[in-house]
Length: 153
Image (tube, rainbow, N blue to C red):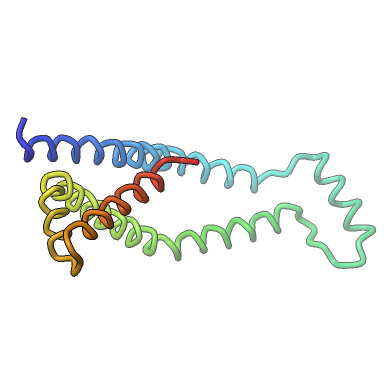
């Protein structure tokens, strides 16, 4: 297998390892969103009788005026939450597209780093303004530091 195919295969596997879970989460969220919306609407329509008795007792003893319908505060919170989410929907879409663009750039860079990494390393070493022995030592230290940083402590 040549360097182009090896880099392409590795990049594809990495892309799938990142993209597949993200797609799974988006699909799961899309499936659950209508159910959550229905649940919130149903729960705010009717209040159990026991809660209504507790609410009335709290209203009678409260120094602050409370609404007669205990579902009213829940409805207000629900309406505010829906307004908040709907106002943020466009930024969610644009942020998702920006993340997708970043992912594509990362995979593009990964492909060329895998394919041409040795040549890029040699060119960088040759352009360092130090003698060859010092450049080799510095490149070795950077390799050691980067390997240490990638291994969990």
